[in-house]
Amino acid sequence: MEKLLIINGSPRSNGVCAELIKQVRPFFLDCDIRQYDVFALAPAPCCDCKYCEYHDGCSNHDLDIFFEDFEDSDYIAFFTPVYNNFFPAPLKAVLDRFQRYFSARFKRGANPPVEKPKRVGAVICAGSNAKTASDYMFNTLKQSFHILNGEVFARYYIPNTDLGQYTFNITELRKFINQLRG
Image (cartoon, rainbow, N blue to C red; front, side):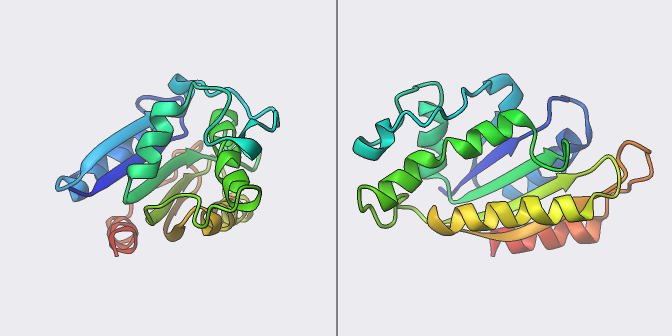
């Protein structure tokens, strides 16, 4: 059975990201779905301790189960608000902890550092019209997953959530799903 990993970067259990997760899940009922809410996960930041340069994994074990699910997933879907023109701090901490894979690749020669290839998508919700920030966030994921044996195929951007002027666009949602699934 294929696996979908949902990474929710929002602290709100009833916000726009949560609603979009509810809208996406039915398209993956044939998959084993694992969801992580990064604010509840409370990941420690990478402290550049160099452990991963010489060992598989991380010296901090708070994300061990997350990384097992990450490595085993076929699809990864990020759902995130824009905070100060970038990812919220807990999601940024998770992304920084991918350093273990960059070290595996560039220090220890594991190529690829993650065996199973992944199809990746990002749903980015902005309180204002932060298209430039959204582009930067999306491109950051593309650059990271290029090394992580993944490819970012899908994007769904929703601006103006703070003003209540947003709409859920079923056409864009279906496009996102189709791109993510391939």
